[in-house]
Image (cartoon, rainbow, N blue to C red):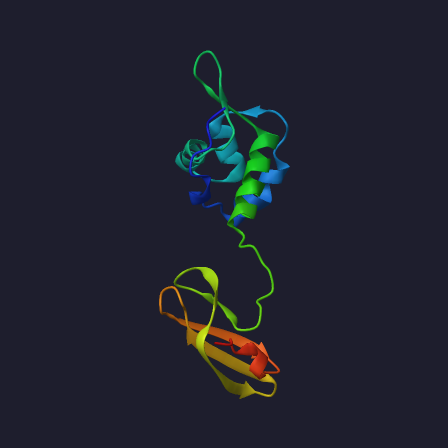
Length: 144
């Protein structure tokens, strides 16, 4: 088996996500899997270099188990998902830092009806952080 190298860099297309679960629990050559998934063989070999499960026989030919590969594709899909949890009062998502932060110097601006806009600064990078809020109240503004 190949060691797991930087697997988060692999971009898996929607087409592959749909077709991969249909792979059979048998050994495929890289060309066969590439044809079944409609991807270039070079792309498949890049995935193998980034940790997709495969083995080599005594002649150094590459063999890929279809079910193991389908599981790897699913894991890549799940690894790209950001963890979700509800934002607390006064928090927002900084697009520059790519993290949830406490908004500094927050100001609430009414938008329409009960919807308001909380705008402030990121404490890490100083960038602008925006958040839409319902039923705006002073509890959304960070204290201190």
